[in-house]
Image (cartoon, rainbow, N blue to C red; front, side, top):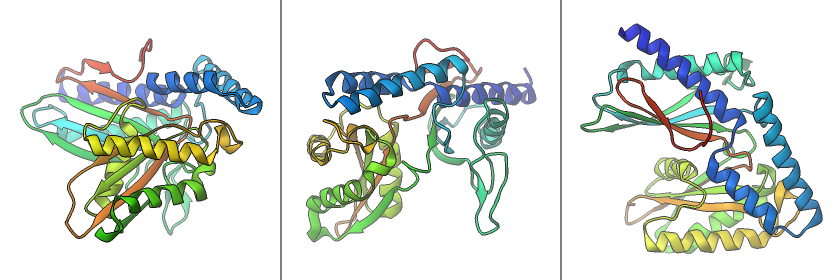
Length: 299
């Protein structure tokens, strides 16, 4: 195939994958929601979980988004330096978003700032959001696709703490946000906490945390302890599914941490709602692909 043909092929495949992400939850989220439903004792909460399950079944059967807010499309890319379409990848992703917006359809969620008009295409100045990592000695590309909703992920927060506040300050920051905003984000939530050296590194870490599986554990022993403590603490708030009370408020807490300046602790929080629409697809140089987050699906 020529490069032009490969660009068209990858655009079509990514468009179908974006559509899939809109109406089919990843396997780890499906599993955790089922577990939470089975563990729940609050009658209203159990009805809400049953409604969520019915909603997902209808979305898959009808091939329509499981939530009307299909978010701002965000892509986290780990691209091999030798992947043949590395130079065309941003154009491919933008065009695939537009194609999926027309065909799925997806809600038009790209409004040009200050000019205040909706592009009607789901693409605009800086949207979709595309974040890059380049991998040495590789000819593959791994793409996390995420629908960042206006009620859950996009109202995230980040700050920089002084070192005297310590990791207790991290806990306070997260719990303050969850008590003031958590019920608006459509629980049960996947909470992504990022710790780093500045606002931007912490924010990026918190978004990466949402790409991790719900049941994953941080490799750092102390960070893993923090995940457990935060999950226990947030569950004690008692938000329950849809913020209407219940025994559990969360699918889980994921922490992603990187090194920091000795005088600062950057911390950020992002939340994924119960309809946590993310997916991972990996292409080789010949555009053979593997979907790592969903089972029993085809493009």
